Image 1 (cartoon, rainbow, N blue to C red):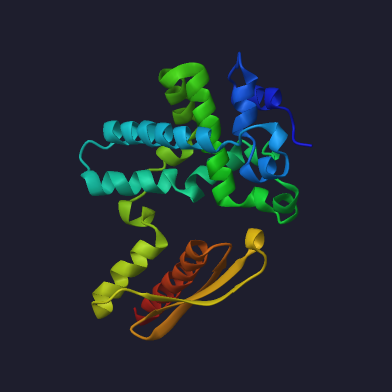
Image 2: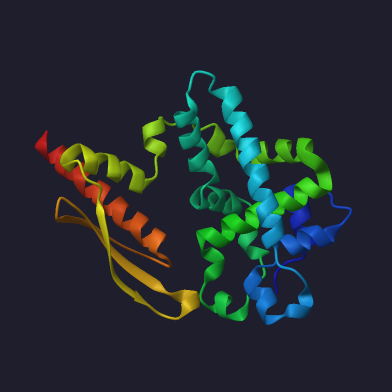
Length: 235
């Protein structure tokens, strides 16, 4: 059984007068599908938390990068509020230990999925916002996201792999990369996609993931690594 919401509240360093909000933030829809009597899942809180996270991170970046234009700020924000970025924060909080999933999803190891960790984190932020308001939630969110906010990498390094590969593809061939699904196997809750990506008819990467987007990102990463390796060899 997942640890209690009260334990998570203590880990977060925040007091809740209404723990039911935090409990709801930890209930994935796969759990309520199997146990309708539990009540609503965390999807509504996730919706609210998504907006709060975007606002707080946008505000912080706006204040700390006064010389950067909209495109650069958008890239920085996307790197932090992406599924991968928020999942990283969720892992630091060990949030996955507290999330309640359905039996099938649990057996499939879904607690480790970036999308579930990120969504659960957004739901917790939604609960914090309702309990403590924007000011306290902003303070807490900036604190837990400090490693990402203060890293300050070059904007180019923050671009998503598919975006970076597309830029390279256009530079080389004036056309976008071509992604092709090789297979999609397994039950609906645990499907595995296999994808390849080619530039100018040349296959450069293969990837896998639990949805097409994950597989394409994996393939793009492999293609970028290959192109980087080939570029190093030319020098």
